[in-house]
Image (spheres, rainbow, N blue to C red):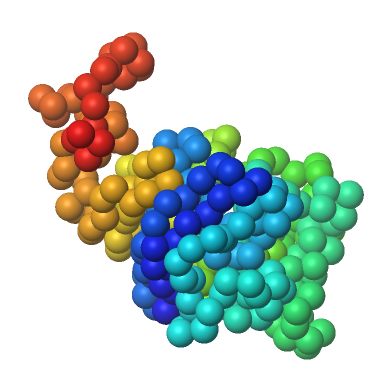
Length: 263
């Protein structure tokens, strides 16, 4: 379905943000990208979606293909029509518009009849969004805004949905609700998910495969079971010490051992 092979991305022709990254997402999979801030995860999503240009980013090496079709150089709206949509970090709603107006912007590539059908579809996934359809988007809570952002992306009925930090700044109950909706999308609509998420434990709990990104390159990949059994993953991403106990924040802050994959 989606395949990245040795992708290299730079900003301003100088800063290498992604180096020889390779990954894949198959139909009906939830694949997660894990890594610290600045590791290159969001840049990978933007490269797939074709939205690097506002930040002077360029793909200078490798290939990105979707169902065998090259995505590099294609316009963002063409990639949406191909079936790939990204929900960016920070949600980025049109705050002066109503919820329904935001949703209809997400369906702009579809016919009026198809957009109306898609509206019913997203309301069935997020009933709370339906309740707020006439509310100005800027007046919603953070969790409600995230639901609207995902719903807006689903208006184009994508085959691959890319989520960038969907749990950021949200209450645990709302996070649970959103992630339950995401997993149901995969089971009921066969939508594939490419998920960037700081909460590694949460991401691995729903993923079928994962990649760890460090300094712009993939340093480890595997099933959630494989990653969660790795000592470095447990220590640096899940917060467990080598003895199996959770570390407190002071221990993590002062911990100096290098990750084994950087040795």
